[in-house]
Length: 246
Image: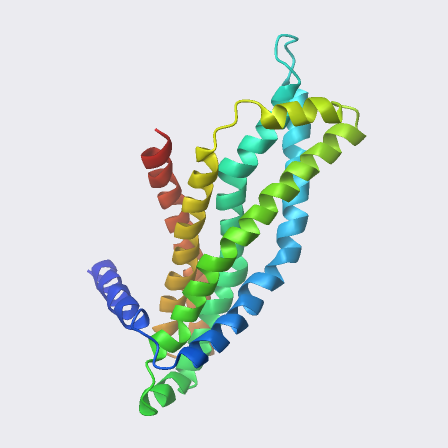
């Protein structure tokens, strides 16, 4: 019953959050703040992880090619497919859960326990709309940019590992990148990215918005947001894969 209550409560809060903002100027200002806090500050960690992950895929693929009948272009092909289909949209989203999701939950949770949300209500402001909607919008606009950045860097990391270790030449690697390309994989990757971005921002916002207690409960809400978002991302990854690729 508690689960059903939380689902219903989440839906009601989302209805409040998606009402038209009272002041567009205030919404835009908050949106740009969230762009900075949620997106721009994540570029560093996305860069490091993507480059090294692309290099790891290339090296592991080369290590497992023990049949001379398998072309070396498989290395570039494997890096491209892994970065587009799974690592870019899914793994990076899971990393953003820990960084962005916990930040959203703790920020809004702190405002709840310090009665700032109650003060917004007294001033006639819709707190869910003011606090949650800009974060959802920022995540759904900025996450695809991060994912694109991650895919490109992963492919470059795979190229660097392949060429500088002498696994394959640049020409063979590029041939692998271009081999058996299906444009729908990009559509699939961005569809997953948008769904995961909504999950991260909305669920984390809900967890923070419904905190009751003090600083200890804020920490618990932040942890709960990370765990819940992680589970939902994995579940929806399976659902979307079944719907779009099968």
